[in-house]
Length: 113
Image 1 (cartoon, rainbow, N blue to C red):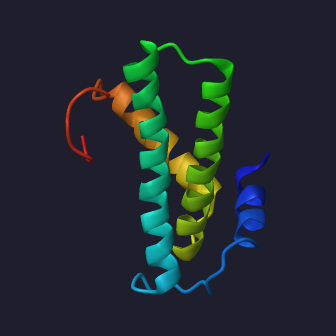
Image 2 (tube, helix red, strand yellow):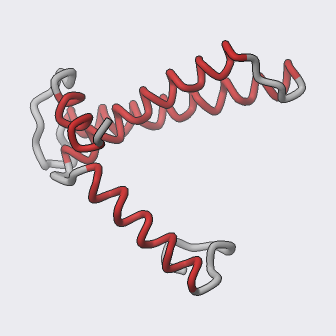
């Protein structure tokens, strides 16, 4: 599915009015939801490592994929509140990674390496 089409369709399920005000309840709810869903994803992986020696069953993988879908929904809506298309975020991220690779800076610390 096209990222921008997904973003537009995902917006239909936002219960808040979209404003660019980063103090708006909708934006704050999306940021907190993103952190929560990312945490739920990590927790599922943690339990697979702790309880199953790191071996994920097909059901485990399906559950992680569902959580990633929730993460994607929140990312799409955070971007929408920032008036940015998902495709632009994806493009910018790939350009950043390509630049780091060309400069042999994939390893290391800091956002602007």
